[in-house]
Image (cartoon, rainbow, N blue to C red):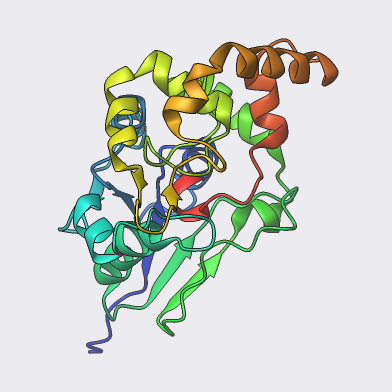
Length: 261
């Protein structure tokens, strides 16, 4: 009798549309799938509610991974330097490390929801030799319209935050567009205020550490009507009627895949 452990099948739910659609797509194809969610402690209520909804639909527990240390701890560790597209220390410490600890030394197949119409995206591919990454949507030729159909046909639908936001991930995610910061301000003012508190001005060097490039959140909100007007104009130029349509045109903008898909 062999003592070799069976290969584990893992699918991480981010609280976003693509990972949810992939879980639905594979539910009956991979019955021994393990589902997990890396909870940073900075999630939107809508994200957590959607993860709970997915657990009900899948009929399985979605294991919550936690880094054990919060964002404030890692912010101090990085000398109060806010994460950015160039320095994604939040993703590394709050998402990737908990995932690799969850895997351990087991042989794992990790399923990722990159679509066939996202040729520019590679996703998170571990350097650990025991983790194999696969992309069922790419392999089967599924595109954005298919993902929306899967969610609609299942009755799960889209997360509520898509009414004003194009991504899952932390409420202070630096990948948010300016109109999404306005959305956070209007939908979750208490979270917006928390995000503001992380911004810093170094009087010695004159450097500012802000979430949104080129301006503080206070400065951004001071011109929120201008930002809203610009968003409406963009929507008209795209022959769309609402932010949702813009979201689905522009949600492939290089965000942290392990957080947002």
